[in-house]
Image 1 (cartoon, rainbow, N blue to C red):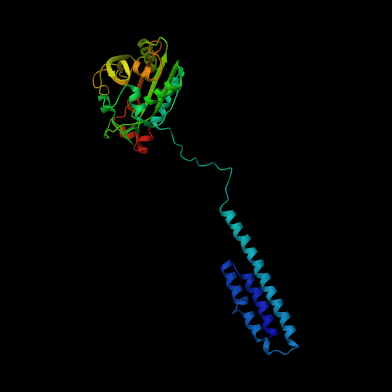
Image 2 (image 1 turned 120 degrees about the vertical axis):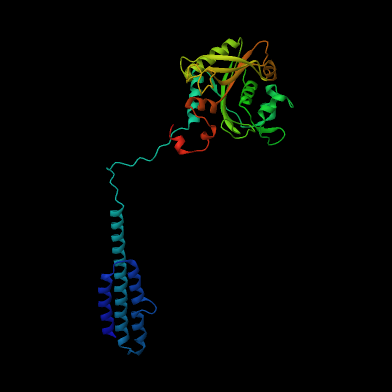
Length: 339
């Protein structure tokens, strides 16, 4: 039995030195130290030994077990270090090598134009004010001189959550909320999303963006409105841009006007973009209706003001010669990469 243990010791030492991965190492451990392993098999035969031989063979068996366990631990550590070295070599990074730049996005054309519009108006002293998209009927219509059953509501049919709560159809409620909280002088713009129950086509969408403006102070006239709009149009479309105001009707302004600019493609001669007219409509405007001022506790005998509003999508389409509004929302990279 002594010879068997010594032979096992030498054999195990040689075999463990040759092992190349941890699965082989585990198989060797089971082979020698497992419940049915070789060392266990030898120890089961100790019952046949004499009392004098048992301590000697027991000590030798423990020596063999200790040697095998230590050898396995050493080999396991060596294999771990070897695997780590191989992994470090495989994953080595040359920090001096040129990097690969990830693709960088760009602002959406809607965001570009909105920022440009805001920049023009803030340069004239306007403050940017925002408000809720989920609005009360009271602010979206009634405070703007559009009572219930007024025919003007038909052109601004929106999405109702309850009878008195809706998705705003314009950013004008921001103006009303501002006039309630702030005393004149007031000079603000209010950009944001608005909603109307429109069918989707090349020029309409149930969700779109508006930018509206409001000025309230003593002595404000239609001339101030026209002068401001002329400056705005020249900044946006170029110094040669001309302005035209056409009489119109809005319930919240009186007098009211549709505002056209000379076609920035043909210069007013007539082309496909302006449909041969030489003019392109860009916004609506007018003097704030006395009822609106009065409803916000502002005395129309002392103060006056003007308001205006434009659809940002329409400006984007005309600025970049886009003929279908749906392209702005479809997230087609072939389209967006142009900007």
